[in-house]
Image 1 (tube, rainbow, N blue to C red):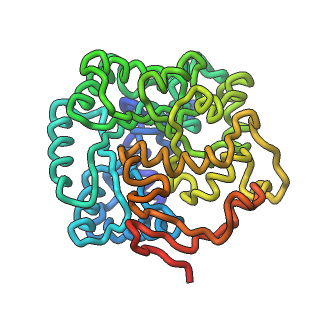
Image 2 (cartoon, rainbow, N blue to C red):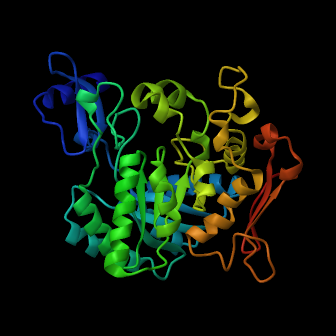
Length: 398
């Protein structure tokens, strides 16, 4: 029945044009293959039964427990739509969120900007008296490797006539207007920008917001940033923009060693995930996970950031790997800071947490071994013995 339903959906959309910011993959005869890219997935999402708030809250509780087991005392949920926000509200009202929760409300490029801004402000206000902060807005500006939807300054190396430079999901002029309005309303803007074209457009929008609204301590964020043009590196510090990257992506997996060279060419693929370069440009670097796309364990992330290798130094086939673009490795103190002090800074919490000092909140993690006395390739094997939030134990390994 599932295959029949799937075949029916494919036939039903045979003459469907590609939606904005999406693509229906087709064979040589123009027939849909069943592969949907980016927003084209919305064509079949409506056929999936919706979960109740209680069901979403149950799933969310399991995710929060996993964060506690990994020593995470505060987090940013980078793309929260209304059903998930309702689950957060339900858990918060029941006192069932132990960590410091910050959610980025999802901005929909297909929606009306005036109506969305009104709703975003209203949702933020609704969370004002809860343990959840909803003062962030997520904008997805480009896509991903697999769909050739990364926005680039120069064309793709494979099939440039088909993929061109990729595509921004918001036109630059609209992006600048939206970011300026969100900035004026006091929102922190969190932009998904994988390609150097998306990074450039985002930085331009943040610069325009400063021009329109004046300099504000907004700490807007660019997430993922696989590619950055060298000319844009100093703009992070100049504009006060936080670089949020996923350290587990900084290793020689097939995405980086097989697909990236094909799509971007040898020169661009040799300059991906410029963590060292960002730090040398005095940017604030914060680690993110992109969980559940990749793992959420900070110890895996710290090890990978320091070694640019798979945890333990062996790939999934058990073959010893090598450091991928080793010049972009960071030091252990820098890797730890990107999860702790810099993470607190991102959330405007640096006066209260992020470092251990008298008078600060006791948001702490107790590890089974001394991180700084451990072989870098064994960091992933360290256990979290205890997680404390505000001095209260929220997880203890038995």
